[in-house]
Amino acid sequence: MNKTLKLAACVASVALLAGCGSGAALTQYNNKYVPIPAALMVKCQQAAPPDYATYATASWPQKEQMWANVYATQANNTTVCNQRFTSLQTWNAQQALLYTGPASPAALMTTPTVTGDK
Image (cartoon, rainbow, N blue to C red):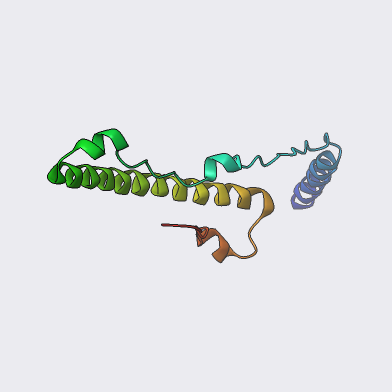
C-alpha cells in the first residue's frame, strides 16, 4: 500500500511538472517612460514691479506700500511654485527609476538636486 502511494505521488508529480513546461509563453510588456516636458519643469517667473504711471504719481508711503505688496506676493508665489516644482521633479525622478532601475537601494531614498535660484 505504501509503495502504491509513493508510485501514485511520483506519477502525479511528473504529470504536474510536465504540464508546467507545455503552457503558453508569457506575455512581455514593454513600457515606455515618458518624461514630463521640460517647459513644465522651469521655475516660476517673478512678477513685474508696480505700474510706472501709478507709481510715479503715488506719495512716498503709497510707493512703500506698493513695493511691500509686490515683495510679499512674489515671495509667496515663488515659495509655493518652487515647492510644487520640487515635488514634481522628485516624482519625475522616482518614475524614471521604475524604468531604468536604481543603481543601489539608497538611490530610491534620494531626491533630485534643484538648481537655480531658491
